[in-house]
Length: 328
Image 1 (cartoon, rainbow, N blue to C red):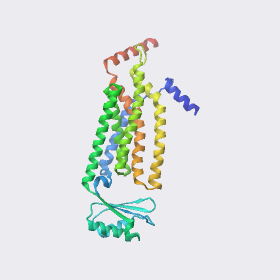
Image 2 (tube, rainbow, N blue to C red):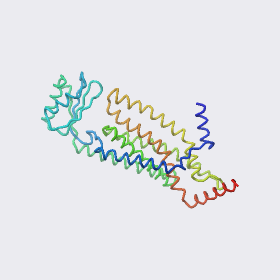
Image 3 (cartoon, rainbow, N blue to C red):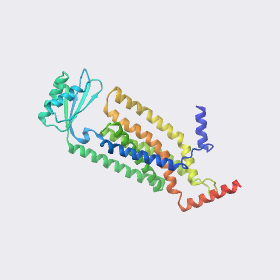
Image 4 (tube, rainbow, N blue to C red):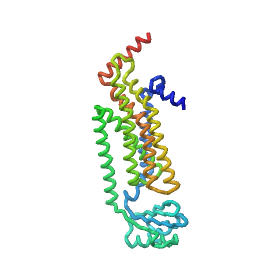
């Protein structure tokens, strides 16, 4: 623990330094590769596994099942509507969920009766519901509008707070990285994209922005205090700020990720609660991606966007010249 504390202190004082800005091209390459892979996964795999709330259809919830085997449910649906390909999942230890495309009222009653008979239950143990495609389309539209409004307000707020649009753009690029990566993991895992997952997506944006704002605030503080005769360049000062906030960013990410990972495990394997699983997967992946993107994407990108400004470029040339004189 003492060594870790000493390491953190050395990073803060500049005694030790990790070259985040100097190796920015490597981080950009990794980020672009991750985004390309994340985009290709749903394209190659046939898209996302959309929940019934988005695609519409009929759903049957079977409770008080003694043996949560999915085979009887599949056979029961096939007997009534053989053209349907149902999605059957277990819910905890005593529940079965069956989802199909839209069924008529008569087909719904017949499938419910067949499910009750297959599991030796009464009609009261099988609940049916229907979600129309128009409702799913409305939910999708609201989710997209909510995302766009959030990104727009966040971009304006950051530009006003930091008094530069370049920090805002760098933060938005990092957010885009987090969204694309999380979506790719969802497609790879095959988890259903449900309203709970959308809530998780919006929540991780807040976490990512929070971490980015903390790092950018330190960057603004360091660059504002940069003296005209300093031998540190603008990139050096940005890199120092990232090193100074590195331990804090990692600690925050770990503290946030551990309970979310526990919820994901409990929700998926213990309780069988799909809502907990859907939202916790988005949160866990987003927290990891947000911590990474702040350090390896947002900060280096902001440094690149400012380094060619006339005032900064002139001051950096003086700093480099002063280093050469001192070296002689």
